[in-house]
Every structure is written in C-alpha cells, then in structure tokens.
Length: 517
Ligand SMILES: [Zn+2]
Image (cartoon, rainbow, N blue to C red):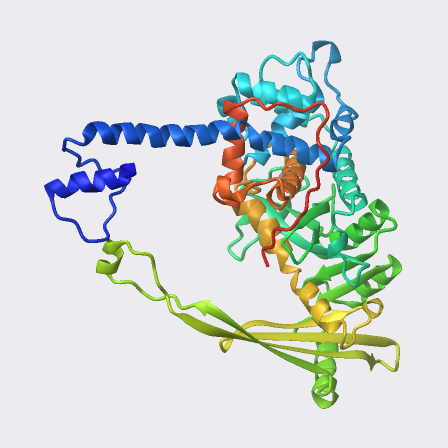
C-alpha cells in the first residue's frame, strides 16, 4: 500500500520530473492530479493516526509527575499543608498547597514568567489536574498570578528549605542514590556560586554592589549552591546560601564567607551524611581544609597556579622530582562515524548519510602522590592529576588536592579523578540549565525581596522533581522526542487532559538510569 507521501510524490511527477530520491515535504502543496481524493483521505488517516497517538497519552506526563512525587515524597502535600500561612484564613479560597502546586507547575513546565499563570494556566482540565495533585476538593478554578504572589510574599524561606531537605533525605532513604556513592561511602556534593539577578538601581538593602572604574554601580543578588552530583548527570540541590549584605555592613559579603556558613549549615541539616565536597580552586586554602576536617567531610579541590601559590610551586616541584612512578596511562580506541560534508546535490537527493568510520583514540594519564610533607610535617598534601587527550586535542588537564580519608592510591585514583571532574555538573547540569534550560533563573519572578527568594526555592524544587522525571524509567523518550520536549508536553497535558489518579497505585520502581556522561 502506498502511503500519503508516496501518493503525493507520484502525483507531483505528473507536473515535473523529480530527482530519483526526492521526497516531498508535508507542506508542499503542488498537487493537482486525479489522485487528490485518495491523498486527502490518506492525509486525514495519517493525521487521525497521530491524534490517536496523542489521545493514547491522555495526560500521561501529569500522571508521571504525580506518580514520581508520590513515589519519592509520599508526604509532599502534608509538608505543604504545614507551611505557615499568614493570610486571613476566613477569606482564603485557595489552600496553600494549591497555590504552591500552581507555582511549582509554572516552573516544572518552564513557562518562564509569573504572568503565564493568569494567561495560560487556566481552563477546566488545568484546575481538575491541580485539584487532584493538591487534594483541595472544592477547587473550581485556577488562582490568579497575583494570588500566588500574595502567598509567596508571606511564606518563610526557611520552611521551604526544610521541604527541600526532607525531599533529599527521602531520596537518600529510598536508596535511589546508593549506587552513586564514592568508594561505596561518600555522597559527592559540589558547591559553587551563582549570579541570580542584576540591577542598575539599588533593589534592596541586601543587594551586593560593584563599581567599575568609571564609577558606574551595579547591584546584584548571588547565591551559593550545594548540589549532590553524580557521574550520570544528576545535580540535585541539597541547600543554598544567599550571599548578601547585612544592614550597616563594613565589608561586603563574599563567596568564601558564605562558603564557611554553608559548610556548617550542611552539617546541621545532614548530621550523619558521609560527604565528599567537590570545590573549585577559589576555595583551596588552609581555613577550608580545617573547617571541612572539623565538620567530618572529605574533599577533592581543584589546585591551580595562583591559589596557595607558594605551596603550589613547591608541591609541583616535588612531584616533578619524585612523582614519576605513580602514573597510570590508558589508551582507549573507539570506532566512530566520520562526519563528512555533503554537497548541495547530495542534500537535494535527501538520501541517508553514509559516513565512513574512523578510530578515535583517547589517551588518559592519571598520576598521584600521597602524603607530601610541607612545613616540617605540619601539613601533608595528597595530589592527583588527570590529563586527557582525544585525537591529540587536550580535553582535560586537572590537578586536585585530595583529603586523607579518601585513601588516594593506584586503586582509587581513577574513580577519584572521575568524581573530581563531576564538579562541572553543578555548572552545566545545574546552574546553566536553571539559567538557560527554560527555568529562567535570571528572570525576576517577583520584585519583592522576600518573594524573590521563595520563587527561586520553588524553581530549585521543580528542577529536582524534573530531573527525577527525566532520568526515571517512567518516561518514554521515544514518544516525547527528546528530554527538552518534556516541559512543553507536560504543559499541554495539564491543559488538554485530566489525569486519573489511581486509588491504589501499582508498586513501581524508578531507576535513575539515563546517562549523560
Ligand atoms: Zn536586592
């Protein structure tokens, strides 16, 4: 049987001669033959076919969201109900969990601005879905964007942080992150600073301020983010700390000072969690190492020329003199497709590309030295390096300082270097995705100095939940097309279908198997 495309092609042949492999695009409309009727019929059939496929999905992603949240965080709505609500309870039409879900869906579906709540998040299906998710039985319509903001201004950031901690604890308890432990023991936590908002006026008293040499001032908000990172590309925010000025400050707050507060905060929130901290060269220094030792944390810190320069030069000299025996070299060969340019004629022919194969050579060199004594035995340093070249091009050249507890030796060096490189996940999978992957971290969801932080925390929670959905086994990427489409498709499912929540959901296993590395 001929498909619609086949019929179109034959009919167009009447008008002009086509290249041998030419296929007519769906949009092409040069059809003027007697086959019109059949073509239309076939077209309708194929469109009906795609509608059926969409019908089959019927709010599937809302269901996936509900199942994922219920699976990992069965008490999620209960946590939301316990949030302090300072609104006049006699006049409240939307319960706090309904409003919170509305804000969360705005972030989960990556709408990008608060205005979209009023403009796009309405309709029968939408509020039915939110009613089922939030558990507010008498919900009859979606709240207005300003109603959501009204509550956000009255929420307490520390209570939302508590929810974040409960979510992470719940994930840890479910043993979903067990396989990503370093040396079967430590969870790797990357910490990095991040610019959130910038202003050309003094937005609030907590704003950091910077002045360039022409005297132009810029005010901004920064936060320090701590995220649990895995080699498979998970980057789950465990907590954050604002870098902001106190009233009547003498010296402005900075990343390093926030870092010291952050380490103590992490230990307070996760008292027994075995942690290995992954840090940038900015944090390399004796005060950092002392604090981490005091708080029972291990570390892998990037070591660069310029940070602790006297120690760096001395350590590298020692390594050059006597570090030649502790070296592992690995060469990996992989057959890949050679990408060849196609000519205009070849592109017109639209044939499948038939690239020839070539061998890609990856050379990795690991080296290490443990217990280098400096300063008459007062300080010992463990140093590890990793150099990688792919086809002669350098792709990685790192030096790290490693804590004693990680037991750096020939058996552990490869795994430790791999984890050291995972620090990048907080920049790529974390901050970059939040800024440029649809969440619009830099967008001012509110101008209010309290509400602004609440929105950022909701964004963090949405990013966490979305990662569990994206990398979980419930999602079928083939039907969605790509991970990037999930948010838009989920929004459509919210808008056009009402999902049915099963009273006794089947026992499921969500496996975080999707690998980005
Ligand atoms: Zn401000």
